[in-house]
Amino acid sequence: MKVLGLDLSTVASGWSLFESTGPSKETTQLLRYGVIEPLDGLTESEKYFVFAHQVDMLIRLFKPDCLVIEDTFYSKDPTVLKKLNRLAGHIQSVWFKLRRMDAHFYMAMSARKTLGGLSGKAKKEEIVTAVNQFFGLRGRLKDHNAADAIVIAYHHIITAAFTPAVRIIEPTLDPVADIEPPTPGDFAKPLPKDKKRKSTE
Image: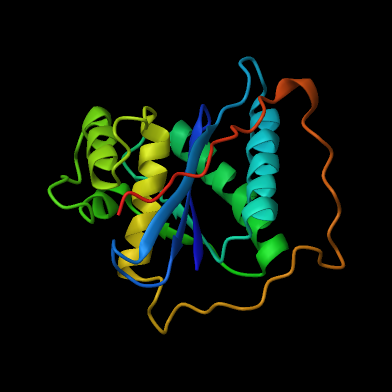
C-alpha cells in the first residue's frame, strides 16, 4: 500500500510518500518527501491552482492508494481557517477525480503522538528533529511542512490503513470525464526531484 500525506498551507504545503505492508515501523518505508511552494505575489485562486496541479502530478506519478491530509485546527484565525478549508476542498476534488475515494483527515496534535516521545504541542523544530531521528534521515529533513506531512501519513498507516473499515478499490487515472488541466506556467516552481531514500533498517 502506498500512502500520500499532505500538510496543507497557503504558503508552502508539505507532502510525503510511504509504502507499507503492515501497521508497524518495520513494515513501512518512507519513500519520498518534499514541499509544494508557489511563487510570491500570486492571488488566492492562483495558489489553489498551483497546489491542486502539483498534487495531481504527485498522484499520477506515484499512484498512492490513500490520501491523508492534516485537518485544520478550529482555534486558527478565521480567515486562515477558511482559506485552508477551500484549499482542502480543491485537493479532495483532485483526489476523487483520479482515485474515486475519500481522503482521510487527522488532527496534527493526535498524529504527532504516534512518534514515541513527541508531544502533540511540539514546536516545529522539535517535530523536524523527531522525524529525522525516527526515520533515520540523519538531519536531511529541514522543512517543518514536510515533517508534518510525514507524521500525518505515518499516523494513518499505524492506526487505520490496515483496518477492515478502510476500503481500497481499483482506481482509474483516466476517467471518462477527466480533462487535462492547463499547466501552471511561469508562476509555479517545479516539483522537487528527490532521490529515493535507501532503507536504513
